[in-house]
Length: 325
Image (cartoon, rainbow, N blue to C red):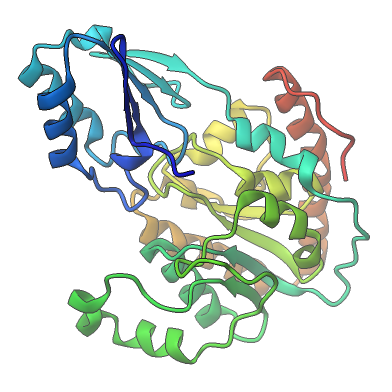
């Protein structure tokens, strides 16, 4: 049974934010929402549940919600938004949620034997297509053509027609590239359910030394999911494609990053494209370093400590976690 974007009773109007603040950074379904409020709003309480993606700010959804309130005479402070973002302020009432999919992910990764003796230098695991994920896979493959492990489930671009003239090189690469494989997506978008991805992660772990994680929201600096939890729970070094300041947020959560070994100035990049280029530059510096093996060992030492840091953070959020894998 599919979820409903809006549920209405005599007392409440409940909105699922993922249908309005969507993952491609748009505020969608505006006309639907205005029609629904015009027909069904009778001074109920308004509740917004932000469960997936959390792109409330970059998408413009909050600004649109203000317009809805002004149109229908709703007190903005009476609108309750359940969110994972701890830094949102007025004019609505925000209630902070635990990063449930992040703190619980470690429980679903089965034990496995670790052996990176035959591993390629860098890897990334991508399901659903986005321009940022396309850019990451492309740039890693250009920089490390024989030393990357790249899974890209989606086998066609989405809504690319108006942009083909500017993406000729990427399109040609995408059409001819043979990606590494693990699972088979059941959807055209390439999406893999989080539970399946967690169960299968051990089958990918030994194939690369360093993982570049591409999180769900390339603009948010707080929305961490099972994608990042996988290397944290298993002791894998990582670089992170997410919003500006994401590494700082992780440090505030008690997680160690790898700035003592590699250049992490990429965390201050203001766009996903610039962040990816800075990540590639950082990896190239490491790749060409005479002490590369030693430095990667240092990264694994940090990653092993992160298994405990991840456990401690999960416990601080009220989650009972299993022993490190």
